[in-house]
Image (cartoon, rainbow, N blue to C red; front, side, top):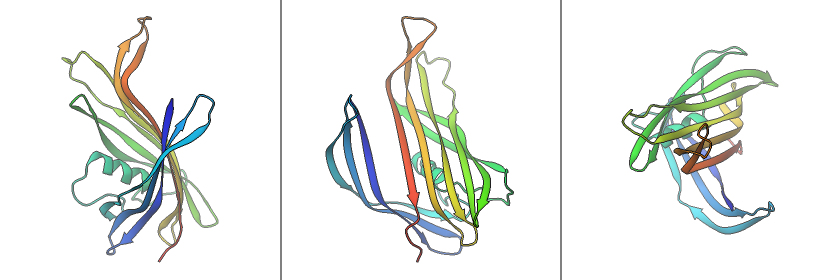
Length: 208
């Protein structure tokens, strides 16, 4: 049995000053669904979700103040700002650190969201990214084998004249857990784990 969650809502970028904005997620509704072996979907439940927010997003895509890993991940995937003058074909890496918690231990996995300026069409800049957060170390004394990563890609449209994103699609695969040897000693299987696929679709609604 497979389950998936669908979350609908509004993302508001509220400009507070020439250099800072708050990100607010409102009107959030989560639908939990079951996907059976035949591919049929049934709704298990639907519920409202409390508002979420990120404070003090800078115009270069960073956030003022201390962040937890989840907030940093969200900001750097939803607002992949290169923060430098670029030409078509240029790319830049946004460093990322994501904490994975397993059995009371935290694995800080490092990597990047690599943003590439791929073109301009009718005045709209086109960006594509590759997300690869998979670099970590485990102390030699730990016998268990761990697997932790977040990988994916995204595409964004940005109106450089007006200074805001107009659309975006983000695809992410995140997995973490322990590995154990299978009957074939050359292979490992993941157990006690989570493997999650996420798709985020953004579309500009209005500008006030």
